[in-house]
Length: 465
Image (cartoon, rainbow, N blue to C red; front, side, top):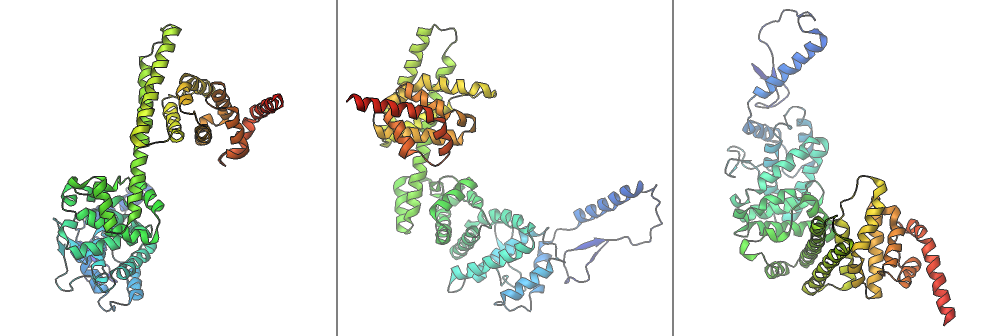
C-alpha cells in the first residue's frame, strides 16, 4: 500500500511503503544481525520504489499546482517554489519529463507529439512560451537562467536534462518552424553557458532530418546564438570534444559540397564558419597525408627481410624513400602546400611509423635508426633555409610533446646535421633567434656543445676568407 507525503500536493510522486498491520519484534539473530537487518530495510525500500508506478502526467500536474499562484513574470518566486518542491517531488526519477516540460511546455508522447496539460495548457515558464514574445533571444536567455538556477541546487538534473535534450532534438521534424527556432535559441544559450555540450547535435545528422534542410536550419540558428558569446576557436574545441564531425554532415546529401557550404553561410552572414570548415578540411588532408606516409613505411618494413643482404636492404630502403618523396611531391601539387609545411608532415609520418619498444633503453636506437633510414627524404624537402628552420622548430615541438624522446633532442639534431638535412647556419639561427618557447632552455642545453662547435667552425670559415 502507498501513501503520499502530507506536505506534497495531491498526486505528488514521493511514495512511502508501509505495512497495514503491526509487526512482531525481530531479534538480531532472525534479522541476520544488525547489518543484515539494515540491508533488509534497504532492499524493501528499493523494491517498493521499483514497483511504484511511473506517472509523468501526475508529476506534470503537481508542478502546475505548485505554480498556480505564481505570476508568469515572477521568475524569482518561480525558482524559489521549484527549489523547495525538490524536497517532495521526485525530480530524480522524472528528470526527463521535467526537461520536456521546461522546453516544450508539455510532455512528449511517442512519435514526438507534444501533449499539453488539458486544464492548464502550456507550462508558462517553458522555452516555447518565454521565447515566443517580441524578443525571442531575451526570452530564451531568461529561460536558460531558470534552468541554471535549478540545476545548481539539484546537480543530478544536469545529466538528466542533457540526456533528455538529445531525445527532444531528434523530434524537430514534429515541431513547427517557430518552435524549432525557439528550441535552437534555447540550446544555443545552454551550450554557450557550458550547461550542454554539442553532443546532442549528432542526432540531427540522421537522413530524415537532413534531407529537407531541417537539421541545417536548426544548426544555423543555434550556432548564431553560440557565436554571440564565444569565438570560433571555442566552437572548434566544442565540436571536437563532442565528436560532432564536419558541419557539412548537417547539409542535405545532395548539397554536401564546398560551394553549397560557402553559399549557405555567406547568405546567413556567418563567414567564420566557412573559415572553420576550410581549416577543418585542411587539417583532415594533412592528417590523411601523414597516415599515408606512415602506411608506406610500415608496409615496407613488413616486406623487408632481416635475411636480405646489406646491399639489397639499402636498395629496398632507397626505393621506399623514393615512394615517400613522390607522395610528398604529389601532395604539394594537389593541395598547393609549400615545402616548409610539407617537410614537417613527412617528419610526423616517419615518426608515426615507428613501433616503439616498451624498453626505455631501446628508444634512442630506434629513433636514430629511423632518421638514418629516411633522412634522404627529409634532405630532399629542406632545400630552402625556411624549410630547415621549419623542420627544426617542428622537431622541437615533437620532442617536447613526446616524452619518450624528449631527452634525445640533442641527438636528433646532431643526426639531422650529420645526414645533411640541417645546415650549421640553420641550427645556429634556431639557437639564437628561432627556438620556440616550449622546452627551450632544456633543448638549448642539450645542443650546447654542438652549437659551440658549429659557431667555432663558422668563425674559422670567416677568418679563412
